[in-house]
Length: 315
Image 1: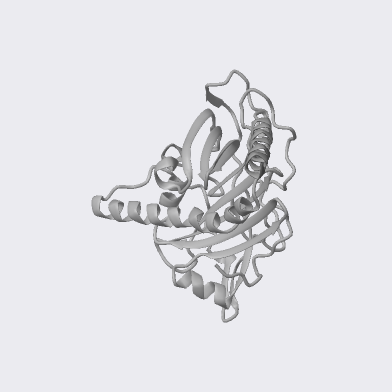
Image 2 (image 1 turned 90 degrees about the vertical axis):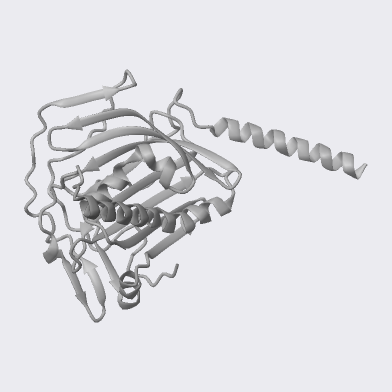
């Protein structure tokens, strides 16, 4: 009797799980149930301030990781030094077509929309499929490449339903403050999951996945940089970033990047003609803002604006 009861209960649980999972399943056929609940990035530089121990980690080739979780939501930031120039790092991060080969847990990426602008900005829509443990997640993102800032940032594409309740993120690639031919890469992200998703997934996304996010960039960028050195080839990406060396500060207490002095020389290019190649009939209205000069922020903020990178955080 106990076996029958247990089996019956298990069947009910499986049915309930199926109904819940089906209800939240990603699909392009209907919009997301909201237009964003997390604080979104704008593509402009994020400042940082790290202490001596964190700086020592960077100098040893280790990433500095700062994370915070609250229920089904989590945020995290990683800083990683890479022995490759910014142009190569940016190209690796922007190469969505090959993510399934090099990015852990990514099964596929399908770009379904791409808009290019005369100032170099690229806006695209992409469908991601990732596998975490026994679960597979599908989600749609609206991603922008900003060569004038050397940043890549995204939000969910709310025109479609994703398996994440919300997801935002930001890549920032800067020349290393004191190592020629190196880059200092910053990755920041926020994720909010639905109630049915196990807590260990939240932990994974704001811990292990953070480290993996910059580890693969370091590995692939340094591989390409070594090959480029041997062959004499150059990356096709051309950065519009001005000299920001005066924005870096380093002393016996640690290091920082101060955006109050950065990008003052950025010249705003007028948007004249839009080149559109799209597999969708609809036009995305949320195009990139490119008329505002970078503004001062006090300290680095995660996507929910309440986590400071200066905190002592261990891997």
